Image 1 (cartoon, rainbow, N blue to C red):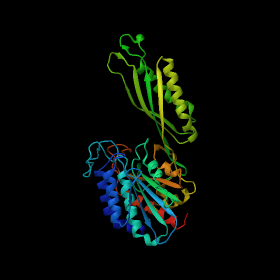
Image 2: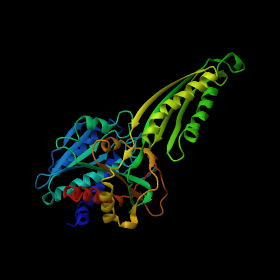
Image 3: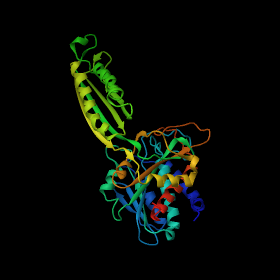
Image 4: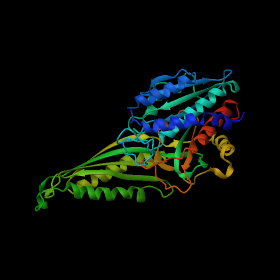
Amino acid sequence: MQLQSVIQQHLSQIVADRRYLHQHPELSHQEVNTAAYIAAQLREMGLSPRTGVGGNGVVAVIEGKAPGKCVALRADFDALPIAEATGLPFSSENEGVCHACGHDMHTAGLLGAARVLCDLRSEFSGCVKLVFQPAEEDVLDSGAVKMIADGVLENPKVDAMFGQHIWPYYPVGKVAIRDGAMMASSDRFHITIRGKASHGSAPESGIDAIAAAAQVISALQTIVSRRVSPLDSAVVTIGTIHGGARYNVIADTVKLEGTCRNLNPEVRNKMEERIRAIVEGVCGGMGASGELEYFRGYSPTVNSHELFPFALETIREVVGEENAVIPESSALGGEDFSFYCERVPSIFFWTGILSPGAEVYPLHNGGLNPDEKALPIAIEVMTRCALKFLAGEK
């Protein structure tokens, strides 16, 4: 079996899929046309996709030559509310929306893996479940959670699951994987600070919510620097601040939004309490009041310790030992693949997409422009993992 040659037979269609998806991005929970495109492609392969799974999710099963285990492969397909700045001839046609996180690459890759596995179905026993997931970008209304609730891991029951994310910090040809945590938990919080309005010339007559907010923001940074061990990774970030109505009025209300990331569940469980203590304490000391709303989002994405040697060996078979990267640290970005990891043995890896000499554009940047040469690499890793697992090599 020459996987690379089978992939090459489908490569022009794989690239066409990616460019269509890139040109027609849709936001979380709005991916109706994207889901329809995926389902149509699967039907052309002779599959019978189930649509509307957990919202706009699409699931299909490729049956092998005989009964056996079930392995799932997952890709996400929602886009972001970011204007594209790549200048590509197939740039987004949906103004203000683009695939700045590479989900078009993920989905085209899984469609490619499906085409390859359909060609090879007479060579494996068991089945491969294809999981095309919406709404990965909605931390508070995750597509993974909804698909799991809708039974995606059952009928047939999934024995192992594999997923990947493009990674703009590695060149094409590199694939990265860690034993244990790959990515962090992703929680979100809102802070409302209330003071008392007064004329800007008489601050003593009011309670300045902006001044209180400034002290709260500074104090929150001490959680990571003084309340979390230097051996643990954590981030507390304030992303938005809104307050005040006029230049000469002491603001009576300020609203802050932020995110909290970490890898250690014990640290995560203490963050809400620590943020609340600072918000209420600092505001109270300045005569204001502070209110915290804390929302638990994604769990840490943790690779199966048992599957890790198998996955690493497979990656090395595809890209060579020198290109199989074991990062020194996890990333503090979040991924709702984490919810699959909590339920079945799972592996999540990063695929390098940086072209030689190209500028690095991070994820969630409108200039992100993955090198399509990464597609056959990701497809081969996913496909080899599936076939070897079903063959009992793990």
